[in-house]
Image (tube, rainbow, N blue to C red):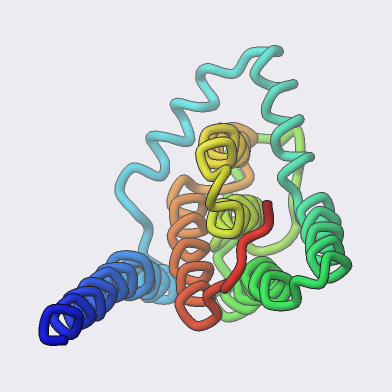
Amino acid sequence: MPTYFARFVALLLAHRRRLLKLLLLGVVLPWTVFLKASSEIEEGEGFYGDLPLLRWAHAHARPALDSLSLFFSAIGGPVPMAVAAVLFTGVLAWRRQPRHAWFFGLAVGGAAALNLLAKAILGRPRPAFWASLAPETSYSFPSGHAMGSAAVVLALGLLLARRRWRVWGPGAVFVLGVGFSRVYLGVHYPSDVLSGWIAALGWVTGVYVLLPPNQRPT
């Protein structure tokens, strides 16, 4: 009996350590960084590297990169991401996996809502250094494309645990492609994109901790 009890205690402590690491690295740290960046934006301060990276991307403009960036920007936009999220959530609900459906819907839908709220509160203007191939009129911080695409990939990766490497590889290419396209097209500062990724990580991980799926889809 003492041996089984000791094993139980060891498993419980190990679980708590994993949970603590997840909370610290996946929730607390990302939100601390994001809130710090938001305070800098609210005070009207820029970020070192924003302008040099924007100018570097524009200096390397090529027709092939134009087409590639427009492609990534289009498929990573709010409408395609919303359609994908609704369809996948519907599939989970149809398969009678309500906990998964709630997790995915809250992870992706909540990220979109937070993005709109942050833009409305902070009101950072878009870069306006040259005419963009994909002009935007909304606010800039954080990038909705970056945050939305990252939220979708993160949520999928957490749900499809058995196939996570099939998600993380292509997903990373997709998220990086979308993020680069927004800077290349001149509609976002690099800090907008990076902050969008960080906010997505903090939000999706937080939802995962509060609503962990019990059974994973195969």
